[in-house]
Image (cartoon, rainbow, N blue to C red):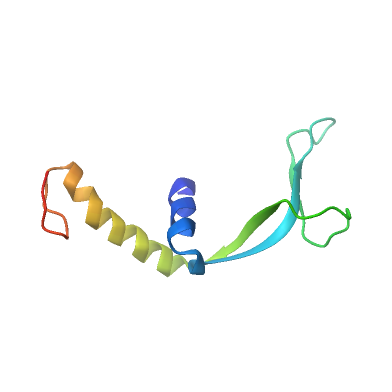
Length: 86
């Protein structure tokens, strides 16, 4: 669902709650690969990304179903909501 939520955020950003934060990845030691987000500015570094913290699940599912219904049938040779077929 990650790809679908990314596209949904581009189409309907109002479905998502987000906040700015500095995000980094540990590259050494026991925590190598660990991704961290500094929401409270304890590291005194400027935000470098937008972190999505919540989604309107019902709104997201509604958008997903609507887009699949609109475009998914065309790939199978079915008529789409617009009436065209492939």
